[in-house]
Length: 113
Length: 114
Image 1: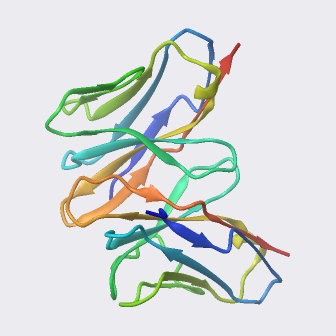
Image 2 (image 1 turned 180 degrees about the vertical axis):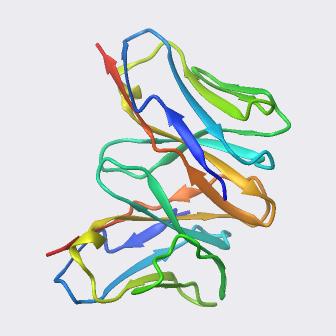
């Protein structure tokens, strides 16, 4: 089955600086890669996603890049703000016919004011 | 659209009792997924269901755990004879039919076994 590794597990960034979180996946047939943000005690929420036919996607201060050859994808947050503090999870969908997502272990991002 | 509804939000059970967690997917969503999250840990896949069908239960423990998504009504995750190690947050998510769609998660049920 799919295996998703995520790094780093914790990340502290000065407010206004950029944050980068990286994930690798094991199955080359994976074709869908979402990112979720989970604030303390709350539900995970989808913040951005990318499909395997696209190399990069941007939404305001958030961007995701995908390198299919290396089987890794990254989340980039620019001009970080205190409200960006949360746990971020990457995920990968293994193949067609099974919509299951396999999640990474999460990155706790702390924005230092 | 009320989103994915889970109830109860908090559930306390004594060891040996049964826990029943309910999940109503978003309107128009026919796929339901259950995940377990231990404190300070990630989301572990348990089961993926469509109406009246279990599609993937590779993450479900072999004993005491079962899930269903009947033709009518919510999806149910049932844990029989609960033990302390079952204490966790259980999240349900749903997605519409078709491929490449992100999940919408419910608020979760926090199960505490005493």
